[in-house]
Image 1 (cartoon, rainbow, N blue to C red):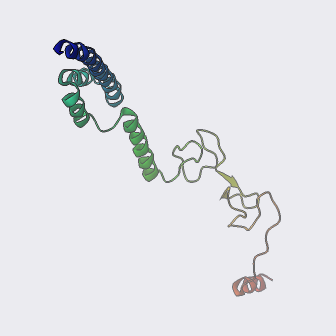
Image 2: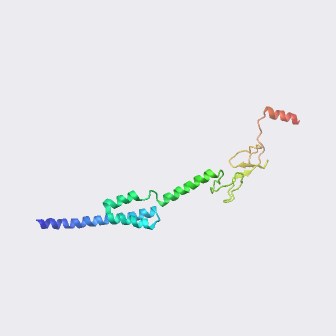
Image 3: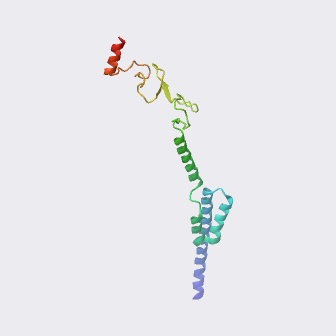
Length: 164
């Protein structure tokens, strides 16, 4: 009777031991991939995998999860890019809408990517924004179309009478 129980428990023990060993190797591989995504320090990578292998599953993996860096390298890079973009946005009032580089407020063309930022009015030769439908300085429609008649006010009538 005892030999049959032993004969039955032996293969079960081998299967469970193999399963545990497989889980341990999988945990070590996952730890290695995870720590490589979080740091470039080789010593930290080796120590993390060693921690999981030596302390094994009940203690090693949860301990690693508590001690690992919070952000991956990709997250750190994205955050640095975002901070740089926000810093540029705060520092530079004017940026090119195409290449996001700093430009002067009166530039007509971006010197970096050559995109047109503003245009010159054909009538008064002042710089106007591309989105404007009319020159605010002389009331000329872009493209040289004749001026839009301005509504006559008391002052403009008075000036017209004084000029005549």
